[in-house]
Image 1 (spheres, rainbow, N blue to C red):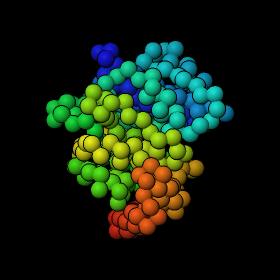
Image 2 (cartoon, rainbow, N blue to C red):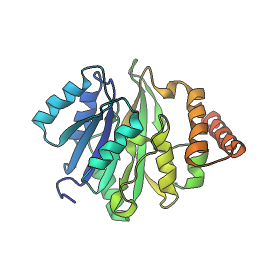
Image 3 (spheres, rainbow, N blue to C red):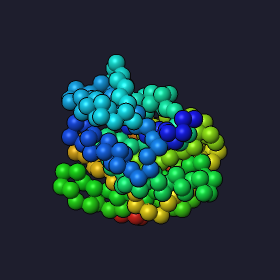
Image 4 (cartoon, one colour):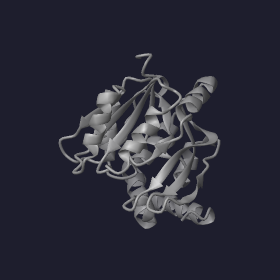
Length: 251
């Protein structure tokens, strides 16, 4: 492992010219400095890749990789993982933000406790209005059976240790590939959460988060394809997801 690149930050990019600069600088402004940021452009049609390229010329910790065809966030993230040199893998999308001490606090949390898989609290903000929607607070410990009922792990907050878990990658499905990866990891290691808000998830106008029924459909398809569930078992867990969201006033 390169000691100057303890963390490899994975960022897929697709038509995010209005947000990617802020997202990148939320990484570059971290108090923890031992990282590389790998941005994979998924065949954007806007000026997002040019913005990333300009920043990479100023700060060599930023690397831009371009895919030849649009393949989805899962493929883009996996390409970045293939190129990663750090011990720890972290994720941030090109429209979300990290708080300045995110890496510092989370890496210390993992190293102090010997945890291989962690997440944090995060706030949710409507990008169009700028209004704060709420704060997501995962349980302090998350196991496989818990996540089947509700995906409480925010992708923008995850870090996992490759020395313990290896360079695990996401299934190359168009949606919910992060959820599928968390389930895969939870079969061998529990996830531990820091009870601090360390990131901001921004709901974009085109975000799947705005269409709850579509999100539940993709959950069902992921359970079937990635977890190998039959129709009734997959439907049961999707129903549990609906119940949890109604109960917590998120759905």
